Length: 124
Image (cartoon, rainbow, N blue to C red):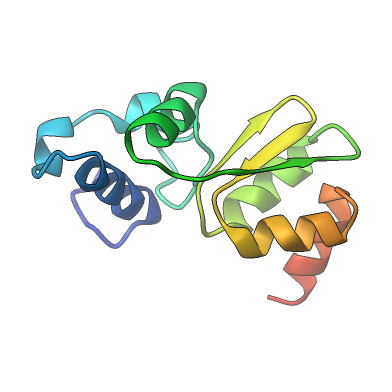
């Protein structure tokens, strides 16, 4: 992983570590492999269970739980990686979003993740 702070994963990772009371994010080298579902894509913000639980417990990150109407398919996983700009965690037919805008918009789409992501992709 590059040491650049321009990547979303690195930016959020540093924010989480500082928010949890640790002043030196450099001491957490390698944590990206346990926190991020796809650590090789530095723009992907999908959290692992460990990352989700750590950020919720130690950083006080508030996640908004949205029930989704269908299972998440490969196309939606790719769209989520490209389109969401806030960390999120997928648990079964539920997505936990740290970004209020995405959570509200997905709720307005009645939990239809495919429709929401397609609309988001068309408008970006």
